[in-house]
Image 1 (cartoon, rainbow, N blue to C red):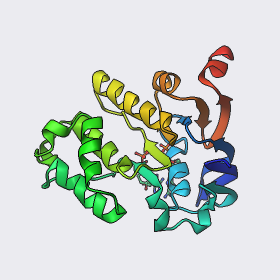
Image 2: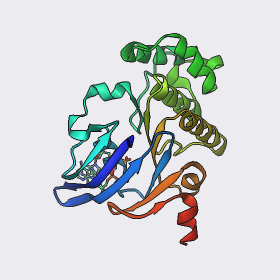
Image 3: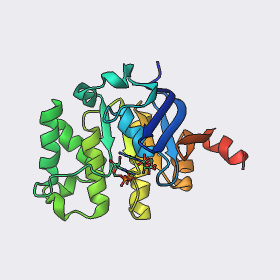
Length: 221
Ligand code: ADP
Ligand code: ADP
């Protein structure tokens, strides 16, 4: 069973085609990268696959659930990091995670474990609003994976981060992949996509113009 299956998906806004007949599959333990410039349709795809938007045409499913049937229960098995993944800025690093353990019914011992894994354990008492951008992104990622999701959606997870933090985030994403999580990530950075992804689709103007492993795609150029 594919973790994510997308067949002939299209999305039409009033006078704007955001996605046109896109298809792809993602397996467990695979990092699938959606590479494209701003406006290509990356965010729209994530919104459809997380049940926040309906397609105009085509079908897609996540963990066997068709997108039109996705409801909040999917969040028990899915993690999401997008641009508006806000933190509680007045609360500590630890509290920000604790809130999620309650919502997701996760053991509190997971907080310490994930803090160590993302390298924030010594900062657990810091106020989230005072973190550097890199630490903030690590906390957002920690929160998205504290319940060990089977699927992780990452919308431009390293954009705006310094190179060393990017490397750390990449390492973390790979370790999740190695534990069997299927990762769907978007980026407009070809170099990042090549380093990180097992499979890639190049998106332009809502269409997949090329797909394959980074190696296959490089050989075609
Ligand atoms: P990306 O994430 O790759 O930057 P988006 O998925 O946000 O691209 O957008 C794809 C296209 O669809 C863009 O042309 C964008 O302006 C348009 N679009 C996105 N959301 C809407 C919306 N709610 N209404 C109208 N057009 C939209
Ligand atoms: P991103 O930074 O992910 O590309 P945008 O800043 O383009 O996101 O879009 C922010 C929000 O505005 C999204 O919810 C998107 O669907 C919506 N949006 C984007 N383009 C348009 C548009 N042309 N008309 C209406 N809504 C849009």
